[in-house]
Image (cartoon, rainbow, N blue to C red; front, top):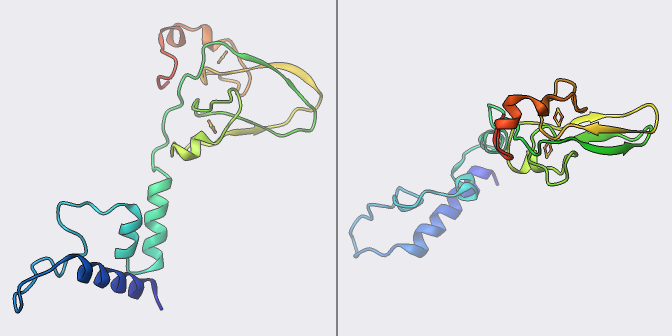
Length: 159
Ligand code: FES
Ligand code: FES
């Protein structure tokens, strides 16, 4: 059974269950799977699609925006952390993580189109990692948070 035929079956069942008409009268909504005033939600829209390719396309456009969002100013001072040699770290690029300066997956769930910066260090050492997201030497703080642009910006605002 194809996805299209499943959708057609479910649409037919929905019509049969929800609409009653006078005998012999044509149901004006019979050709529409949903009432006009209801905008189908994302899972319902999947039932209207005819091919798996359309499903993949819809899910892709839903989850991955074409234009990446701007990073947000998470904080205005760097965070000192001790990095262990050989460990892979994921620095938050988007500024939406609740675990600054590291990524907590918010860039994905908020569909920013941004990705964290993965990095390693050769030796264990303490460093200052950027939280304003404006550094020119990510993931490290380069002092840009002291610039007028960042000082004037509000925490949580886009760069
Ligand atoms: Fe910001 Fe992942 S939460 S890059
Ligand atoms: Fe971003 Fe210092 S905190 S440059």
